[in-house]
Length: 78
Picture (cartoon, helix red, strand yellow):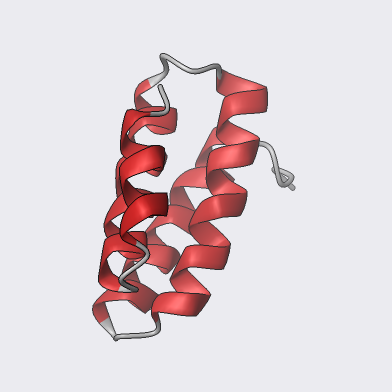
């Protein structure tokens, strides 16, 4: 069992969030991607590629939800 903070778990959850986004389930994707980003920052650090990927995916989902301010803040946060 890998656990919630394992990098492979983060990758799998990221794919699931992206799938939800592509299906139009933006709120579900946003919730998942926000969690992934929090865990990635805590476990991998700000400059890790997985963390940066999570940040970009969350920003795009926020944009899709028309949360423009949150999208911009997420994109420029790091």
